[in-house]
Each structure stands twice: as C-alpha cells, then as structure tokens.
Length: 128
Image 1 (cartoon, rainbow, N blue to C red):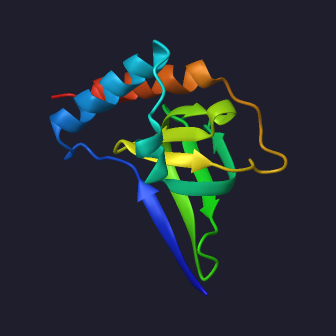
Image 2 (cartoon, rainbow, N blue to C red):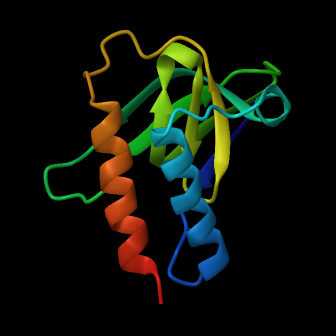
C-alpha cells in the first residue's frame, strides 16, 4: 500500500497575493459565505481528522487521513485556517480545501472562531 503525506503549510516565500486571498477567504467565511459545491467536489477528503494547537503555537494544525482510493492512503497535515465540521469542510494554508468525513473518535473540542482568529493573526504577520 502506498502511503504519502500531504503537507499544506505556506512559508514566508509564498506570494503576498496568496496570503491576501487567504485573508479574504477567512473574512468571507466569517460573513457566512460557504465554499460552493464545485470547489468542494475537487477537494481532498479526510477521515479520522482532528485539529489541535500546542500551547506555544500561533495556529492550529489539521491532521487527517485520506483513505480513498484504498491503495493510496495519505496523511494530510496542514495549518488550519477555517473549519466547519457541520458543513463537512476545512480550509488549510495554501488555500487548500478539504472535505471532512468522521472526526477522530476522541478528538479534543475546538472553537471554530478561534481557529480563524489565530489564522488571521498568523497570516497578517507574514505579509510584507
């Protein structure tokens, strides 16, 4: 079985335009916008996922398992910019959309608004 890790974490070398897009997406999500079906249809899918933040970290990290197709499972790791489990999606750094299946059985609770707030602070600090 092939197993890969898909990382979604921008660096300071990422374009200012990509950071501005991330900030605009977060602002739209906060206003109630949801990603359209065509965007989510082409997104990776993660099961057994969780988000967490270390005590000394600025942002939350997303960890999930892509299990389809079965012969090509992957571990998806990324900086969480926004997440809406009730709508089955997450936005990761690099403006990468993920559709969500079941969360990890004993995942710790998290605050959706806090994830976006910490992501905004982190992204603003990266702007030139």
